[in-house]
Length: 184
Image (tube, rainbow, N blue to C red; front, side):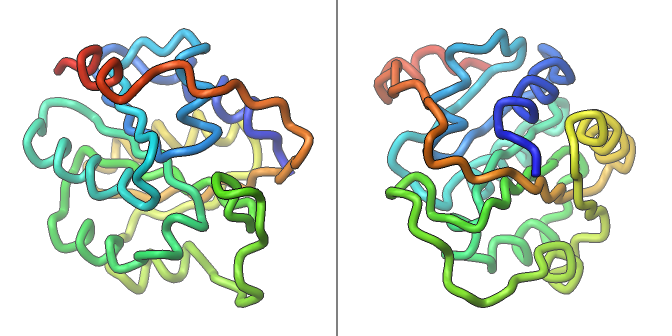
């Protein structure tokens, strides 16, 4: 499986200033301030499972921007019904990246319940037609391009290696700093 940082580097290289990035809490939100992201970034610090709902709201109010949401499989497992909400709203400018590593990484690395979830099948069953599983950073760039061109909500499932020894930067921004910096 692919390490997180390789996917983040590919994502950051792909994003442009016309995009918007919403990150769920955890390692991705902690890495982003240390990367050269050209898009506006809203990183959630304490709201597990809120990245996709927040990104959906931004996508609906700003149809001129392509919005990318970063969410973990543990967070989405808490409220998978959001996929049906995204499908019903039909934002043509929303791409959700699901970081699938089989762990509640943000709360200490506990494994997810031992129930296999077929995320692409679940997304399709909820009504999201643009779904793909991504296995490497090169594939991520191509999948993001297809998702943008589809003009429909999409879910890309990234198979991410869980590495309990990964050196993740500490939170370097406070919520009020994130809010003040986030301008569309």
